[in-house]
Length: 488
Image (tube, rainbow, N blue to C red):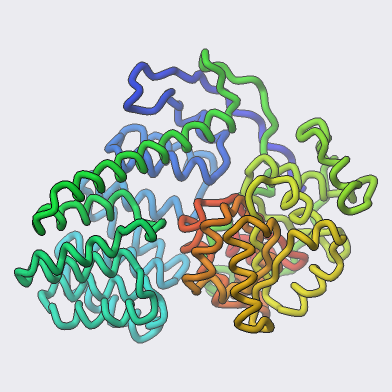
């Protein structure tokens, strides 16, 4: 494992305004945060129009060597927000060229829509519909392009096609509601808006709630619209409070704004925002040399009782070399890419944290046989908290598994990446409060590996749905080029 990154110091200033962040975070200090919180902080700056803070944070991340695809995307958003359209287009094009994907093309297509270049957006949408007609995000872009072109029939056909697959999809229902409004049917529009954000719709965003409220006002239901505005405000407040509580916890911020020295995540950690590597970028991949492991941290000092739980649940008096560092990173909410040789005990690095975390752990694994072997080898006390969801289950068994997940009876959930396309599975995971997402056999993400699995590329899209859990990508096989593809 690589050496631990030195701590970055920074003075924290408390805010006197409760309507804003409870404390100011210097951009350099924000580098101490786990990647998940850094990106959420950048998103908050974007949403609240704090352009200077947003720019400063991105500049610090770039200067620290963060050259990820996600940083390119955020720089494009910043350029677009400040009206620098030429830079936004250049950065989005670079992002797509560096790691081609449907997500990259959609981002560029939406940029062209926003800048009024509808023909360019249409060409991108048409190519995506031919290549990936199964992706909901591709259909959403096609609907937006149809709307920009004034092609109501095509837009409605796309919405109805989407609802056939996901009858309660809030964004699609709101799209149909907007069409009914444009057609002069405010009552029909209001009915669809209510369906989109009803009490059973747990995943609606504050933006969707406010859009539904606007439609309901036009439909003559101002009281219900006011209720939705209140829900949206509560949702925003809860999200911001949660974000800054997690930031304070991660930085060890006291009431006076001071910070004690704290352990840094190992340099093996970075956000596995999954993209496809382009072969021409690295013409001659060579096997990765085995990294020398630094001394493992004192896990019980960092997280008291962890080793006692290890012996109680798994019967092991101690850990193998390398395991403690990965487990410490996971428990410290550090997104981690860990390359460990076969036989080093990779599974324990997520199975033990799964029993210690309050929420659930989702393990994405490529093979049913591999999942079954891992579950069968678990101690009985751990197996009782474990659920398998795959095609070997009957319909009744699958329903029972989803019920167990949604009700919190499963702390360790094994599933294939294809399951992430299923709305019912995602809803159950949402209810389960997934705190850790494990990408087992993570080399399947990279085109450099013979086991490349395209469905692994759906993982980034579901992270926001799951509440941005900590991510552990783990493999025994990774060339340097695979590591770049997994972690960039």
